[in-house]
Image 1 (cartoon, one colour):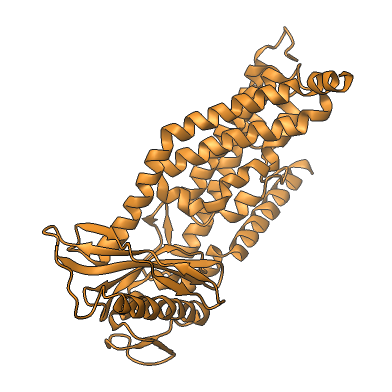
Image 2: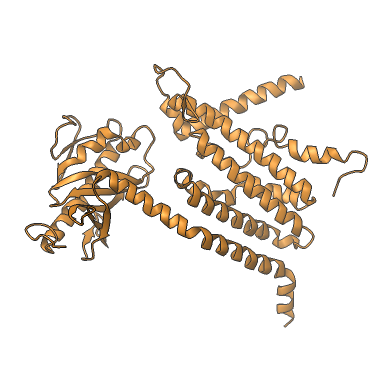
Length: 209
Length: 207
């Protein structure tokens, strides 16, 4: 009993202020969490819309599609069906991530409605070296993925970056980042395409709406 | 309160102005050096970080000053940390809600204000011994000094690394950007040169 009294005597201010501060954070969170979530969704939609400009709605794909990462772990892929204003499918968008030169790279990618050609990517998260790996956000590198086939891509040091093919020309001085982007595209695109074909989401079956 | 009756204004102005130059946290005391090195690639994020620090510093100084007679000495550090963490969390949420791009740019450095020793130092050295007005002025003064230091560093780095200041083209188009200044090495070099310059200037003054 004495111990409890001593405990309260010594720490009542800490207990009371922790309660008060907790309340303050809870109130701020309640007031702002909606807006924070809205910002996240808006960013994702904005980035995806630049890849699929005609898309009006992004509908999450319900079918379970698993991607095996290079380290052997499996995870559920986040895929969205992009629909035009009159509910016609115009493409697909999905998230892809992997390790870059410094920290994780997270991309939002898009493919055409038959999943035959990529529509490019946008960077959601990256902390690549400014001026070097960071150039993966620039058109020079990004445009090489636009209309590239949805099959394993290869990276080369020389070549024509303007050519629409499965060969990607690396960024000078940022080989690790260039390789990382190609690898994560290969990991996600090929597996997602395979499983979506198996599940009949793409291919000959056309969804009626 | 330590204010004497004969010169009431002096402790207040001292509290407000010491942090700007005489005890500038970055350039003279060399404390809280994580943000000056990490977020000074451009002026905009540096200014946002500076304003966030002013907010946290003023709020934590107010709370610590109010509680100064109630805090038991051996739990004071944890009390300061809880107080600072609360205001940093609130500040972080506001940035995420109203300036999401800036919040993303600053990344983990906003939550890291919690462990910035400038704030806990002012709580210990000033707010836990002074009245509310002095503590608020001290928070504003020290925070402004810190912000000015951040902006100076960021201005130099942004100018040399991109040719822009505050996203406005300053250097001629022919200027070749010094990319190294955008990387950590640029922060160390710039801070080192500024500190060297300040030491040289103040030494001359003393001689």
